[in-house]
Length: 149
Image 1 (cartoon, rainbow, N blue to C red):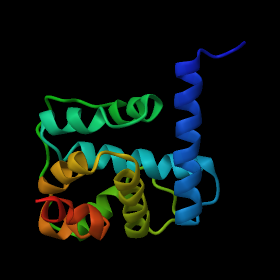
Image 2: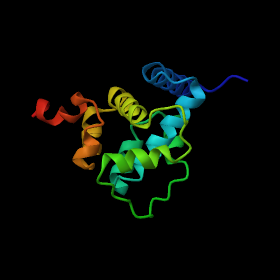
Image 3: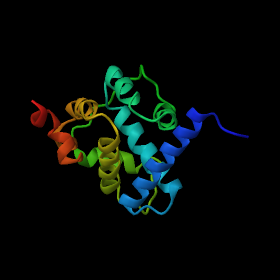
């Protein structure tokens, strides 16, 4: 069966993202990359306002967007986490590969997102996070607004 072009493109784009994440994060395979990407996306999504979560989701390739929205309860109140340690710990506690360093994996996913998504949208996401969590994003993503002002 031949896939429609739009489906083939999103599968290819998702494979590229998982490969990039795997290579940059020294992850074992695409399964591990997918588990890391899913855990970080879900945890990030659940910390954003409803409007920002939707705006950010629109930046993702269709297949990754489906993973991002998987299990989402948009009317469930967002939980605010003020410390990097708690954010990292909570991600590690959710279906995260044991052999993977949580903080490094979060940084790698954030770098992937900053590389592929609109810099202004990433700046909007970062603006919603406490200072300790902003530090997990690449410097270029954190300073986008200052550099373009």
